[in-house]
Length: 470
Image 1 (cartoon, rainbow, N blue to C red):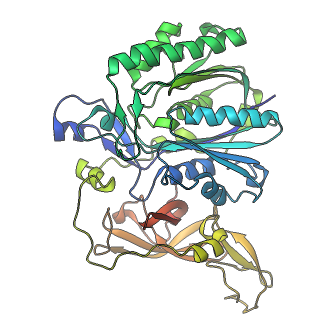
Image 2 (image 1 turned 120 degrees about the vertical axis):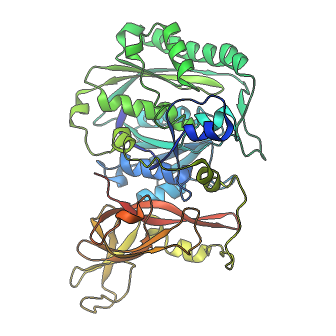
Image 3 (image 1 turned 30 degrees about the horizontal axis):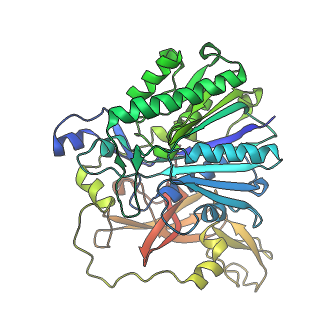
């Protein structure tokens, strides 16, 4: 038996109420909110957070393969999967790959993971997207940011793969060329009637014929749609009733691109019962359809926050001007300070375990953990008697903090904190996704992998603190 053995998700803290788009440009906008990645987040950091959520009930050293799927990688030439593997503290011999350039990249990575799982590997697939639509356009209102992750394997399967069917067609209804900042599209009616409806129907009917199942056999139909109307219309044409159709999350977070259908699948699994069959259908220059059957193991599966855990953790005070600033869609006066220098490769590489997997050290003489790592123990002064100690996931609290209104930031004021870890270890870091007025000494925090800055095209990532969820 091969299938999903774990899943996780990540939804950014900040949401933009779509009424602000209507106030700026007039006309009609969809109901609800869109999730907006913080200015220090991107597809890679969100996918890393989803992967960390997914790996919660597992030993990351058991992962053999990691795939990262996105259409909005921070780099045109540099892999994201290797960075995420470092964040997860996977083995050095892990196999990694990026799947890109199509909305179907997420399901393509999932199918590749299923194939690898059949050969005995335990494979993580993580996907995140942060797509941009041009101002005053439908895509700006429709798109949201988010991420999801699954582990495919053959042990402790919670959703078995019963079959799959794919349709691939060269069809440029959505595209973004080398120099395009925004996603572009062809005329909607032609794209939906001649592309989306046909490809999704062929894939869904193909997998149902292959598995001998009919719409009445499924508890949930997870079907990608650019907007809910597309999804509901094709579901009705395929023979599903409204109760079977999985909520698209469109009014709560928007269309999250590569992660859209996978996040719906994660939400469906959160409510699934043993024996439930789930039809999963993606879209993008064709369509991939996979049938899952939930197993008894779903009852004992706990650990990740998943979609449900992040959905209601939100801040909706963002206005449209802040959204434009965060996405660098307007030019603002630069800070009157020296330009940031790019990170040193030797320094970044030599501190690989600290920067990505968040390792400090622990004194083998007295047991005191320390961050940053040091040769001399601050407690017993033992020299060169340290072993690696990973701080991610450790209980941490704010020891002291300052709210800085003068520091350069796309979201002033900047909150800088000293964080103490339980048992030992002290870190000076930024505190983000927080209400500055609600920060207090003793507040429990957790660590989030974020972007520190970009200089000369190099994205420098590190860990920041956020208020503890739940």
